[in-house]
Length: 198
Length: 75
Image 1 (cartoon, helix red, strand yellow):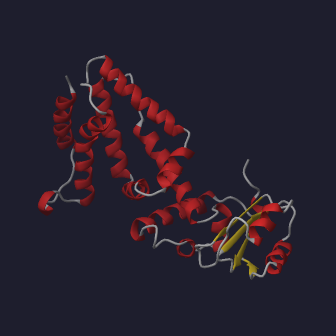
Image 2 (cartoon, chains in turn purple, orange):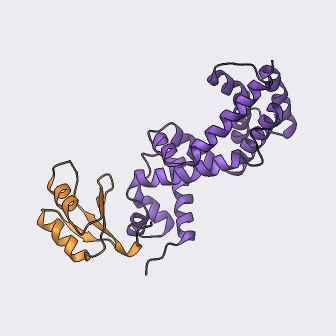
Image 3 (tube, each protein chain N blue to C red):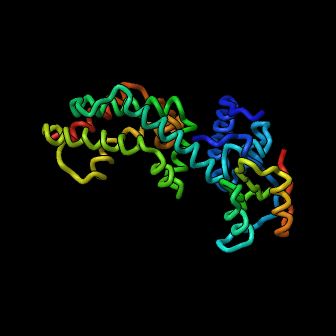
């Protein structure tokens, strides 16, 4: 009898992420994936219609995991400084805990799959609404200077993601070994807040 | 509702292309006992996936063979 096997499904997801991060979409195939999971190709097609379907379903799962990780213990009603720090902490924790998933997400983000995936997750609009409310509250409470959204985003999160990239690669400029610590993150955060506050 | 996994049939074929008015599309698309179908033309096995409450694999193989394509059930 065919039973939906959660362990098997997780094994498929894990191996698919591994292969896509390593070989990209082009080098990835359902056959190779089935082999890596020691399951038959038919089993794989029971769950997924084709390669695109698989990429989109797994991408959706990862996106949801990322969104829920980002809003953990966060409320749009927090003061701007407290809330943004929580965002930094949550995003840093996620990146450090799930480096492969993040690498996979980066590949997806720059592919035509991104839109399909985001449209398929109803929680995504909730996430956007929460983040928008957080910014609106910051503006209303005069904790944030008004600016173009993209300019805001690049200043609010750019420094964090630069540090996280250094951390993931294990080195910074000129190959200097680097490990991100809470102190360094704080240092960058203080400068970021200073730039965003009126 | 989730599809009953018993009703999903998987085949290896040599269907290399599906276009709007091709025989495969017309036949499978209009078949009253087929709820859903797709062919992964990018895969080496050109995998055909058919969701049907009633059709047996042999019947589906018969349909595909009649349309001039190879078709065998994947274990």
